[in-house]
Length: 170
Image 1: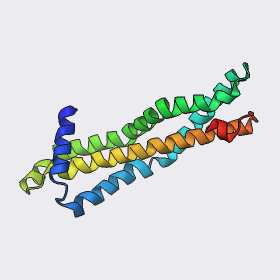
Image 2 (image 1 turned 180 degrees about the horizontal axis):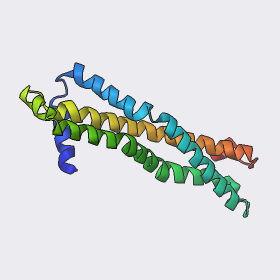
Image 3 (image 1 turned 135 degrees about the horizontal axis):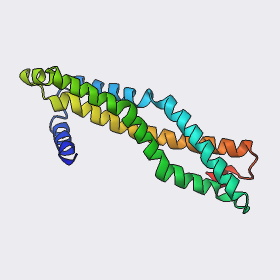
Image 4 (image 1 turned 45 degrees about the vertical axis):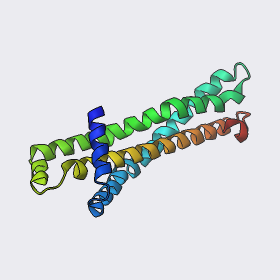
């Protein structure tokens, strides 16, 4: 993984201005594939996770009269732990597997050798747009996942009439 990262970064930095009209649209395409297409699934899973976490937290904290700590627990669980992990798992499961199959098929069909024969760096053309697209999409999806989970948790607490002000929650 370290060698792959070093090779990808050296090619990306070394050929940053090369074939911008080809590589930059490809990066945007992979951002849309990895980010925008997964947004409904992220919203659904984050909403469910927010409901479950705040529901269980309020259930246990209400026994001791400590409902004010629901926001702190929610932020700790979602922001630090589950948000990034769940977003990364979604990206890996949906888009990462598709990219592996696509690159493997390109290698098996000889497309990589054809690119090399044409003088095109296959790492720069095939790998760099995917790496940057997945990285940016994963970052954005993590933020959206956290926001959706926190908002759905507060919505559930509001519906359940938990005495929790927005200031204390957020």
